[in-house]
Length: 502
Image (cartoon, rainbow, N blue to C red):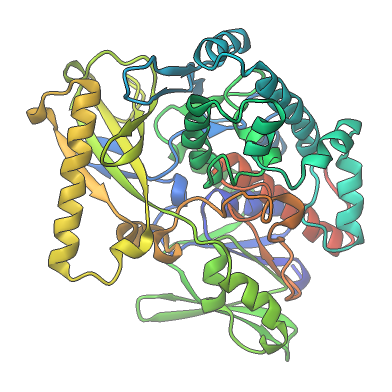
């Protein structure tokens, strides 16, 4: 294998696993470096006794036929993990005495629910559906964005369909702009609902989320798409990708924390230095795919980068992502009130929005008769770093109790029923994932950062690529898989090799 076909992939989350699997399948010699002892990253899993907890992501899009995971797994010739579609995908409860909102998988049921919950909003939802259909056809044609050279431009134009020319006029619009166009900008209940949902998927509210992004994430629960619950755990997705890597003899190296990336001009190769305890390892390759958040790239890049001050400045000035507090717990199933969904989003007076994921009976996450319950809320990462140990412990315990009480009240759980409880903060998330300050999700998808205006997978440094939840089309396992597909196609084109279809 020549150096020209050697690739180092940094990070074995879904983005790293997918790009490594695709390129290895295509004949490249791929080495995947992972700082943890397992794959999965933010979509990974950990165990506490007999309980299995999803670290971050708890639901998956893109498993349906034609979805991004389905297409990639078919190309890799590995089976899709077993999953059930979520119906409803989520129940949203304002906790103000009004009827909770069920986000149904069946289109007709969701339309009826919307009309009951948000009277007079039909024009808004119809416009969202039109934009989503246009976006879906576009994304299914594997566009490259942002456009950095003529090849990227050719792929962008190949992906366009006539509808895109119409929806393209909304490129710099927000979701609130759509509400105004449709006369729903005074509907406070609708705006509250959109704010809760969009924050989960775009890191922004209705006033800042790009319209072309928001319309798609709001439609992903319904047929012909769907949100899915994986049997066993979210780790099932990573495990299947690992199978593909083993079939193609790719190398996965665990406990390898990347310390630096430097271009070796004497060999015309990238030198990646990783550490494992006191051991130092050097890897040389023609291409490096960097999948951690781009905010971490600056601390890893060394050498002659002074000519790229504009790029360095852009990375330094990226919008600040959120952190998360995640509550992991276990209960006897009989101790929780009637539940009608695996996922709930509800408003707590003193905590804000809580997103709750509840395991299914016999789905592999808890023993028979028991369930796991995970609840998360956004937090400012700076609130958790630089604290004295006593301050940190006190704040963590306070949130643990407050989240427990909010969930007890919501689901009518007796206070002494918890079999297991623990809270993860951005500090713990940083230790687990090595993401700077434990940030979650990608860049906020506002009109200035989405799509054509986003951060490119192409860096100014020849042979160094970005991939993951900050690169088009954004966060979630489906989003980072689309990003992995895009960077794989770009690398093939750069080397003048034949393109492939997925």
